[in-house]
Length: 437
Image (cartoon, rainbow, N blue to C red; front, side, top):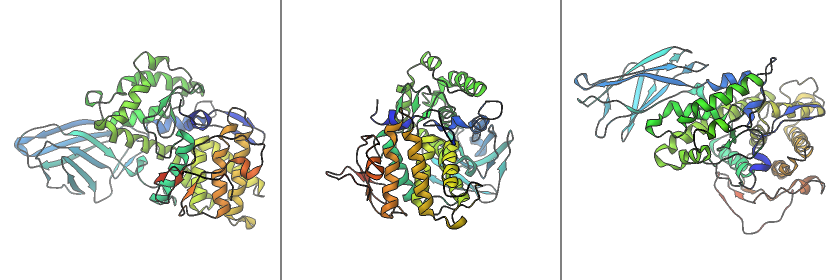
């Protein structure tokens, strides 16, 4: 077991006075409708998927045809299509509304005018190359702004700020600032297997989204080791959706193969690494980063440190969990009516708000014996607040514990101290002194 995964990486439901039920890990699970089933998860599961129904290239006509169907639950806006053509073949002759670039065998086609493919609708895409030999395009990918591949509608983090935020969260998730895409383990928290860079779980509706995305990019015949688990994942996910309860059992997956080995190999194999990484990044952005950046915009937060703290909380508690802590912080500062934006309301400053938010989150973690040892992750953001590193533009270390900021009643988590630079690169310092200033 990785050192810190059991302390912070998997989400467990618990209830506190004055706060809604919060989730710690695998955070898609907590969006529950009136009937008890997590409707938001059901929608998100199919939000960014498609199927290719036609893939032909007729050499005699120098003409290729791709037809893809939107099988998700949201419209695909301004799709970007990429294909691999045979070695030595050049893509040419862009069709109206499209332009393309080519890198080695990969041709990437982007829109020059708006295009929307509605749910359950199909789109026919034509392309031409220099080849007079028929072939089938390989590695067909359809991406879209509406599938979480771009920045959120609100004001998010810069590229470097996001790297810093993700590196810091990765310390709490995997005890290293390097995102661990290959990680997979059953940590016996009642959520099945916990996997990848954001702790996607097989029993809570988010790991299946990664696999669904991966299946759209790569078939089992083309090296997708996880495709064979699709039916088993759906059995588990259907129980999750119908009951609203996280699913601990991995029996269906274990009957198919070695899930943890296949998950790790999907990233560690050179041929499949890029696709598998893309899907983890896409689902993480769609479930955690984009919603929480939009939430930050709603409440009027402008500082990178605040947004990084919210992002970490979203990974740790799930979207509805972090919203509950936001509401609690608002109420504590006199905004019980949840007026948005909160910054500027009755003189509330972002500094005062972040301080209160971190205190409330500290209390959430410290109140449960199982998860109290994750409380040090909150102290790292408190230290940066105190020293004024609002833009995350100054290199810093996570050499701080909750007891350094708030007293000795808090346990020591034991996270490895790392130095994170302003561009997201990192190192392990030879020496350090724990302090909250």
